[in-house]
Image (tube, rainbow over all chains, first blue to last red; front, side):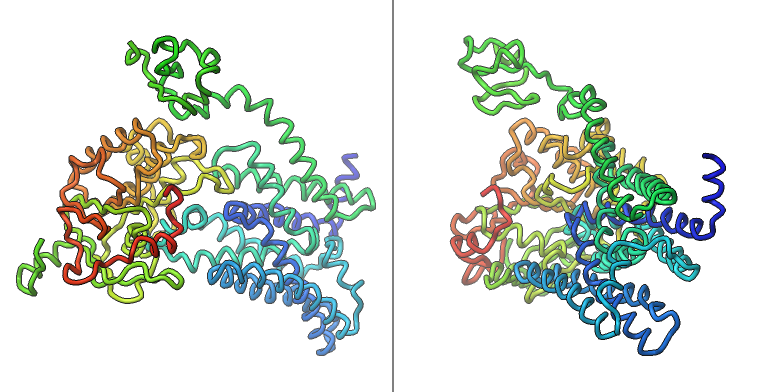
Length: 339
Length: 252
């Protein structure tokens, strides 16, 4: 087993793939954390669709210029198109609400249709797009790897370096505006970094599963943590683990790396959601009582002549008591006021 | 206050103003919500902006802090003046849980400072302490009560060391004990000389603190009205129209 692992680590193909998986696994959930916070979990999917047109455009330009190999421009094409697409989405999101939804749908479907159409014009078939739709990490070249490294470092620098500012803008945009922060630029930064993440993760899990790698680790982390910073850190860790483990599995078993990684992430999510009730039940009550200093004993006027109600359970018939709050009646909190 | 003439006294007023709106018109979509509003808040004042729901109070405040842009007229503040804006409660349904300390820390950011400064934790703890929540720094905001969430947002504004604290309906939908606690918190802050502009449905618990009440509602003029234009029409649209236009009063 150990020697087999050593064999895997000595394989240059596998080395490149592992480095790419490690970087993408770390970076994608960091961007995903902002998207989940903004309730834009599906943005990655949208950008992925648009990037497909970019892949085909890169292919077209490559074959028109007789470049060898003629798919050499597919990743740069995807990067450029995804960035333009995500900036357009952000502009549309900013402008309006009702028309924006429709505009997004048009862009998504246009992205797929455009990709299939253009790849045909370029002399390829939609089969050529499969590697981009479902990932092709085993074919990562040295050039690809460099691009992945540079883009991942940009994503990590922005996502971690600007965490406080991006959190502020994502959490409460109006407060950020009132504070004089460059909200427009920060929103654009999120859009551009999302686009870069999609194109970088395209090689690892494929455009159709990119969003899963950005979002599922965040969903796992949410089960386990109670702060924004920790959610981001745990999500990134989960991303690294599922990417590296998933890729390692495919070294021995002939299955799709992208699909393996995503299924693994979902298994981790299920495990976390089963584990969570066990670990949190004991703490939950103490944590969620917003007023631990105020006694839960209530007295409800008109019940038992206004005598303090001994416990929440005893008060059940008169008033529903939820964590020190009362749904009905006009209770007072302090026993002594109930003489 | 009588309408000031452009004299030396006016210049003093200008120098003293922490925030000043002059002839502000605001349109939301097709409706003309604010029609020529003048309002000045001077250093050390505690100004209450009163009026019925839907009369455009929130619109005015959001224009003053820069969230909305006036169609005409202008809002001026001294250079580098810091605004501590406390919006009506942010929906608790944020995608990712955040701790009170994380939310308050975002108040430390400003133009040219997109990263938290050194020693931010101490400043955040101090601000939470000012609103009586020092022991809840690590609590998830979604698990706090409504009144506590409100105080976290006040702490986020206070941590900026603001020149003016602007609060939009801070006690709307907050239970009575929390309102009393809020009034006590505000009282301690006002004692430190803080300038405050607060939007209220009614003065309530804050009455003793308020140095000037400005009525925003021409239907029920308030004795302390100084909202110009005093001559002619009120600066605010009829209640019905404005109510239809404004949807940012979920509690109305």
